[in-house]
Image (cartoon, rainbow over all chains, first blue to last red; front, top):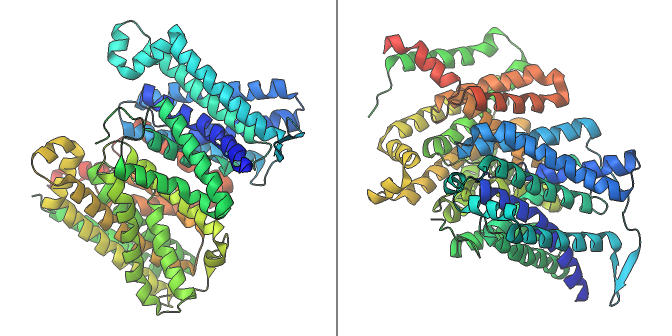
Length: 284
Length: 309
């Protein structure tokens, strides 16, 4: 029972990190970023390069990896997405193209075999008789911290207020003197950075390989649809729902069936409440 | 209603004649095989274009229908040992069933739900194929399908004939009242709804038609390769098809089919580039998005034949 509670929390935290970034860039810039999974994979590979190949210490490698991917996200938004913003369709296509290009680049550079990243925290920690890897616990703590910081940033700072303003009405925000395009870049950096951090944190205990980004991204879609497109609290609630349902299914039925959980959740949500749990915008 | 002009008809007949005679002129089994794959991709691309090109609803998981059709053929051949010809109608039925499962909850909504759901569904199905490897054969897939027609050249002609029928049926549908409604949905869905058109019905029905041809193509592919494997469901297959439709000119159907044939040939020529091939593909897509937003084949053909209309 306690096992389900802890493992569910860990996967919820990782899903939440992915989903929040995905929903943020959609809510603010209306960019449906199909390259989100590529950021996650890039984060994991950057962690691999910095720790295993260059032997950098963790405290240097992790921020470096996150910054690198955030920079990549900003460049992608600036030079590939922005010129095509007028058409939602072209944005979908270009981000999907970027994600395939990244996957292929990783494949060509590192090959398709699994890469190992050394654990940042090697010890096992025992909570109430349940042994849990320190790395997983680190992912959980870091995830909660990141979400908390993000919430404080958006609610308490001027920049956060500007982001909220743009998400409500980009044109009006522009008239009020908010540099909309710069806000888009900042949000893209945050979005790519959180995805990369998720990738860095899971890299020691999940398989690092070129196609690793696709399924987590699919999960992020599902979470965002269940929680309501563009709603951050909604996607956190949905992460908890999905993370725990998957863990429970894994324990009670079998791990094979976990992949179906998100699909079923999406179908049910779209049938009963298409705007999601906390989606404000009417979806139909 | 727009009629099919005689110049379009002449062009179509010329292209089909060249395609049909090419393997006789250059007699090689390799070329016949490549052309068979070309024709199958033509079926997939034109079926994608019918739904997504006309209604503007991007289907990012066409491989779902392709894989469903192919695996249906695979299961029928390796588990029930039925006559291979039965797998064609069965593949159509299964693909249509999948289209209804995904289409019903997502196509009544606006927004990106349909695109996301199709992409997710195809990715998850690919994963399920690996997880339930006892039934699906896992990475290796299912082997030992029987060919529909033993002679490769005759099989190629058979597939080409299906491609021609597909393009004709879809073009006729696209130019009918029905196609007009689909294009109207692309233009302004709210107005269509206000005019009393059952928008959801038309979108789901067009997805079902699209899925039917994609599933048929999947079964044809399975009986050409004589095996089916999980990559059929992959996002790469879907994106390849979308690139073909973009190159052909969205919404033109014949453009998608011709672009599919040309790009598949190009892919064969690029085989020497090995793992860089997909990169070249992705780069093509980016260039087209930036410089040729209306596509290449259909606009070119229209401009060339302007004088004769």
